[in-house]
Length: 104
View 1 (tube, rainbow, N blue to C red):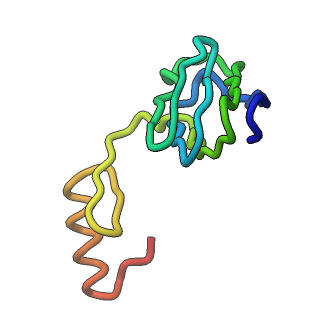
View 2: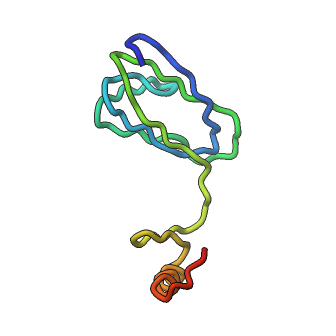
């Protein structure tokens, strides 16, 4: 974004996410939180409201990544390339992978 420009991104209240600042600085959200290169901002609280947006204003030339989505509200277990809900599911996934029967 060019310095002094603003953008508004629809972002449902039910979403959670982050903004990672790649370069520059700007002001984010209704409280106009200032963030700059290398900082990460946490977004949302996973509520039930589907309406919402985030406003972003570039203080100087600004590049950022916005990652957001609706929480799945399930346990998550990650090991290597596998992501499952339980340690047991991870164990089975590794076993099936090693046997050549992993077809998920």
